[in-house]
Amino acid sequence: MDFPVIVEIINAFALAFTVIGSALVIYGGVLAIVELVLFGLHRKQTSKSKIKRKFTGFIIFGLEFFIAGDVLTTVLNPTVEDLSLLGAVVVIRVILAYFLEKEAKEYDIDS
Image (cartoon, rainbow, N blue to C red):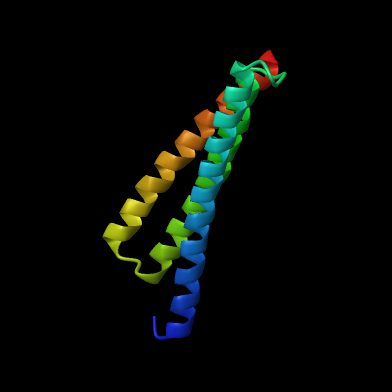
């Protein structure tokens, strides 16, 4: 690209989306750990399936941000190799998100 300002803006957003995706997964994991500890100490009235469903939601949401960051990064240097790699990563993440969401819906039915 011939516009260095635009490249910097896209890089900044790609990094921000990756950081936000990581933060969502980390926050969801820490929240799940805290809720499991409270559940184990009998200080919180919930179930493991509800905790798992909430954590799964954070993972799915975080994956969406990771995909957005990958798309923005690839837009800057779209080589055939980069596009192939992005396509493979997106397919893997979409399949993972699909099965995580399917599992979360199964917990909705059981609860």
